[in-house]
Length: 152
Image (cartoon, one colour):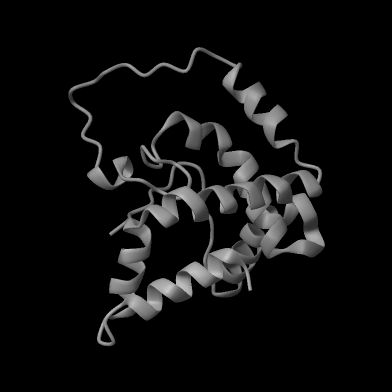
């Protein structure tokens, strides 16, 4: 049993018997154990999965970071929902930070490789393609140029 599993089991045992799964997960996510142990371990696992599948994580992120100056104009008219600024996975400032943006491509490829190992670094494309195929099978279609999509 891994150290992470042992810690999660200890946290679960310490929770009140009537605590819901949501309460337990909330406690884990607020715990320094999550931030200081589980997040770095998960991040390293993702980076290693990318490397093992031919995705050069560090080189790709360095290339993206160096592509431009990456600055945002402060626009008072743009309201960003608070949940984008809350810690998310490995990104303490939230999923709307530069690091998350720079790593999105390689992280997606690593997730795809883990979920669709037969496809390796192309696993994310296989995953998304499966959704496309299911939608077409259900009768969905892509709007033609000039048509409108309404999201309710």
